[in-house]
Length: 176
Image: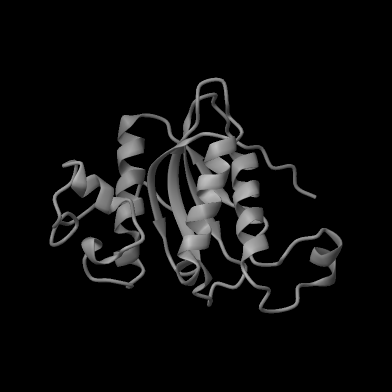
């Protein structure tokens, strides 16, 4: 079995991509309130700042910053996936191996993580998160996707409402 090494920095910022096992499902947006409650529950016990997040039908991207002295993003993601899985009704049987491990079979086992290196890297990943619904063809304008921290950025005056509209963006440096 491969020995995965994760990049960990105490109090660091990280970009994540977390996928459903079945990429043809709309499970996340159909159960957005369940997912939000799971995030609130985990943040109460294990704090972190959500710098950016977008929930798509079958996966999500986020940028989190952990508190000083803490680098355990894996624990938070595992607890989040578990809390969501326990609340969502079981829609299909899972494999024998997953039953033996008490896994619901909703999520892909692993996730993709990138440790943010500097402010430029941070900005590129925030942009990637916000443009992602357009990239996937779910909407034609960033402002039209409801499950994104983009709206918080607009409310706080960080981004204009038409951000990402006709502007050519270089998102090649960030992403899945």
